[in-house]
Length: 411
Image 1 (cartoon, one colour):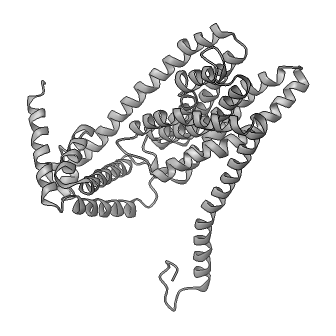
Image 2 (cartoon, one colour):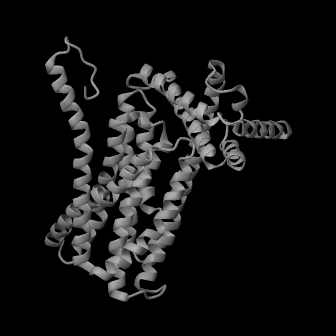
Image 3 (cartoon, helix red, strand yellow):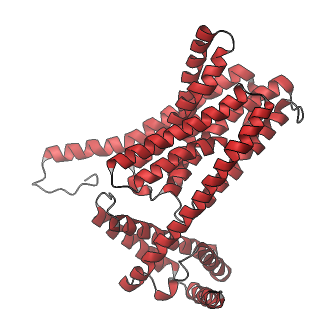
């Protein structure tokens, strides 16, 4: 009854608590969505009051343009073990509505206090250099840390932390850009490279679209380190250091734009931000190789257990071979068959990371049940993926090609 198995010995209190727990599980997402929706409407109203309806529309259209390429970059990072689309959507919505709403309230208050204490112009400095870095990075980090605490099994390392924090920051930057672009359009129209919305778009949409994701990536790195450690002090330190680095980068960036001139801003961009961006990219590529090694190490055991065919070990060992497998299946058996193969590949990766976490002694709630469930998902996905003879023949052909590549590759 209601998802609870009962008989005449089942206590009534157990049924009541089970129903209440189920209602809480269903109620909380609805409450959060309503609050975020109200926050989004409030932000829209504030932006319209500040800059006008038409500038807001222009700002929103322009703010959408950087979202696609930047989001695609983070999805590319996340190819080995894609995060649940619903969580990624929730991260974007939280950044665009929840985090932005929190930051707006506190930053406006800080600006008023700064004006009263430091005089004209002081409020802008306090809001930009002190309040914004502290509040905005905390608001963006709230979602990432929440996912880590509530669904720790989703975090397998630094890449996952960077992806969640990056997508949250993309949502935040989207809403922030609406205001910047809208204000620039109201004051200078479309303009050119020296002024108006074109100049602001080149700066924020082309030259620095990764600014907010880069700040937040520091928190993501901290959460990823915390997820891979069994020591409480390491987890706490990683989270605090990640947040501190995010705040520091944000403060340096805003300080260069607010307190320095054009030359200071350009120097900060090339001397500070670009090297940190390159270092973060190198870290991501290194961590992706680690993810590949994690999966490859588990595949022989999967074959021994009979969960995958021995000939599929090569096909599942790299992203290019997986892509070639899906492409061959699509050409021979159609898009539905290729989609089934993709689901099978994803199930293999999920089980590989889960077994790796258990082997490392990392916390996995109800590990035995989760592993059994993951094995069942894998077997079901494989049965669906290879039920067509054309799919099996495509897999055989790609596997042979991959083995020939391995044989001919210089050693």
